[in-house]
Image (cartoon, rainbow, N blue to C red):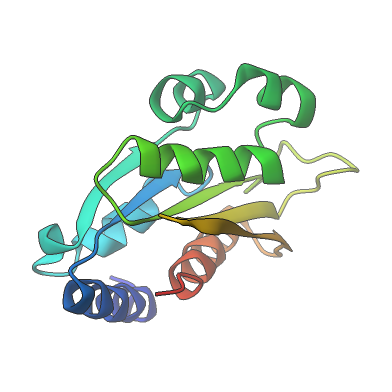
Length: 158
C-alpha cells in the first residue's frame, strides 16, 4: 500500500466524517485508484458515497451525463469534460463533494496539443463553483496516475 496516499485519504475522511459529508469520485485515467485508496481507510463507508470509473466516452455520457457535444468539441481530456464529470458525479450520487480526473497517462495517446502527462482534475461542491486545474505531469504511466491521485486528494476544499 502507498502510505502517502493512504494518509491523504485518511485525513480527508476524518474531515468529511466530522462534517457529516460524503464524497464521490469520477475517474478516467486513474481507473478507480482514488476510490480504491479511499476504501483502504476503515470506516470510509461513512463518508465515501460511490465511485464512477468512466474510462470510455460512452461511460462518461451514460453514467455521468457528460454531453456528447462536449466530447466531440473538446475531447475526453479537457477542462470541459472534467467539469461535466465532476458535476455529473454530484448529480448521480448522494455526495456533497466530487472529484473528477481525466488525462493521458501514456505511454501512448499524447498529441502535440495534449502530450502524455496532461491531466485535468475537477472538484465539484454542492452550491459552489467547480474548481479545476490542468497539470502537465512527467514520468511513466504509473507515476502520472499516482501523481494525479495525490493532487486530486490534496485539492479537496472542505
